[in-house]
Image (cartoon, rainbow over all chains, first blue to last red; front, side, top):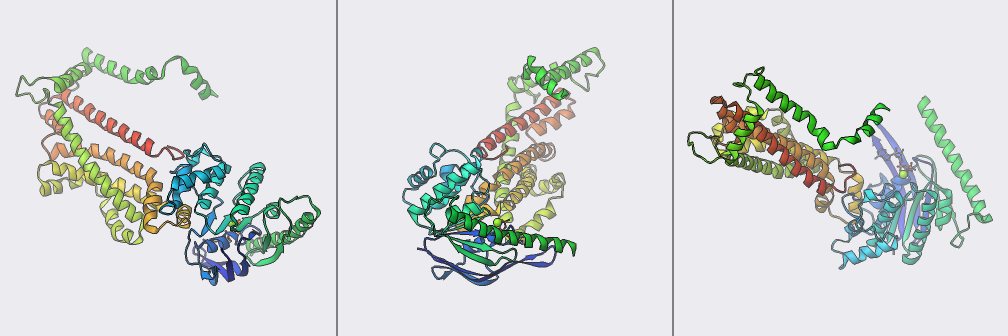
Length: 261
Length: 271
Ligand SMILES: Nc1ncnc2c1ncn2[C@@H]1O[C@H](COP(=O)(O)OP(=O)(O)OP(=O)(O)O)[C@@H](O)[C@H]1O
Ligand SMILES: [Mg+2]
């Protein structure tokens, strides 16, 4: 059980070298219900990773607060698993050891548990490989398995499939939906791809260009697996495209102006 | 294109032969020049004499008690090796431990790093008089100098390695429920291991330099002592044999360390 509450969250960074303050998030509020699959979409640099880092407990908001099940988030914890875009595997550990990493003193039979997750993400036979010996898609699956093994109530995923080729990406999306259907976690999924969001999410948060605000919330009440060519999906895609395009153009113009001035 | 052609064209001659060619030529030339008289054999002994001396130094039975270079090689080499092992071992333990603390904890950096940076530019040879006054003409002097010399590259590289631990790996560990103390051992140290081994290798090289320095002036045994002492007897053959002995032992210990590193770092992208 995990409900995420984001209340009036703003975040600014101090750019020490230029002596400026960069506003990354501006008064973001939303509630993500238990077992929901939520996607966050927005132009590059709008603060998506910043928001995810705050939910993970890596960073504190400048204003506002974030809660899990009503308790403020103070630090990272195994109740909120993070799948990093850069995989962040421990290169000195094998696949098996990476997946066991978070199971210290938790599961009585760590290695059996880890092996179960190796199978789940289809990496049987690769248990004793090091990350450097794996392809990008395989590394991403290890990263997913490592987080799933500690069984977090929340899954925070930052563009996890961005570096994958289209085919592997589809495969991973399907696997993720299967896992989610089985384990019913709350998922927050950051992506740049509208189609990926339309394939996966119950609800879509569209963010504005920096400083990131929530521009629009779109519910996707369509059964899965979804047909991306279906007319309802096409309608949604058109709408989202329009919103994002406007934001990207605005962000671009602002940057150009900042450069001129 | 030319280098490609050269690379493929040399397949006819085995690598071992190609690599031995230059040293063999140099040795033969050396021998020849001494025999012909171009080089004065009082100053430069021919390789054949060096080899014979070396053989006697290693395997000879002590018939002439007055000659210290009969059958004494093993005990000299052992003395030097033990000093290197003690000094290097101590430097490795202290250097890695201190380097890890300095790299990881701000407080340790503030307390210890200035002292390290203050002492580091002093050449280790400048410590020799101090070492002799403090420890006397004993093994401890040599171990101190070797330890001090090996300590700096080890501590500096360990510190750099621990500082460069990718923050995302620390985040990943914290997210998986790892406590901060545990992160030092389970993330920072393994991530710094490539740097640590670089420091150890540099330190070991310095250790072999310093054992010779120490034995020349501060201790009365070992290969360095033999090297210096034979100079007084103008035993140039022993000098050359001792030089290559030290080189050989240094090379051997480095190979061993590289083997260990290659195994410990088999996960690393490039090693
Ligand atoms: N640690 C930091 N220090 C200074 N500025 C930062 C820091 N982290 C992020 N920012 C700034 O905050 C803004 C939002 O960054 P963030 O990484 O959250 O964007 P994003 O939406 O994830 O972008 P992308 O889609 O490209 O990953 C950016 O302008 C970035 O430069
Ligand atoms: Mg990002």
